[in-house]
Length: 121
Image 1: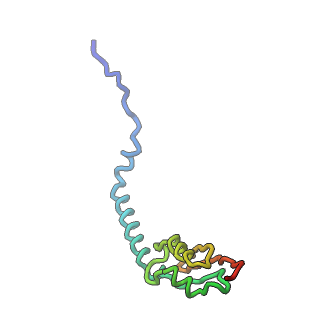
Image 2: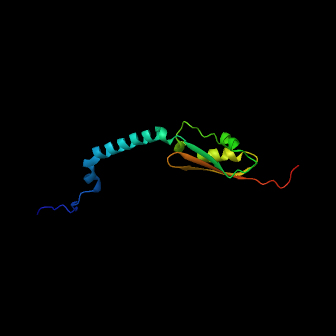
Image 3: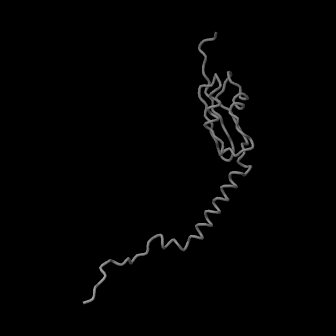
């Protein structure tokens, strides 16, 4: 009497074995994505072209807000920390809140809400 193997045979190929023939294509796509990311990060078209300040009336001049924000004109606007720039603007005594908005391709808007003095000493 012969002994029969009772372990079931796998009939369907796994997804990993089906995709194993495309590893070179996947590697090329990843390399192209990395090169594209590098060129997008260093492209001068994403340097800040227009920086606007809105919401400041009379207490805080726009030049003071721009100086406090410290937005680098020679660095990609999408790689700059907008929360840090808003925090630097909020450090101005008469500024209540500040938000920094970026729009494509490289425009920056700093929205400022000023504090309203209710007493003058």
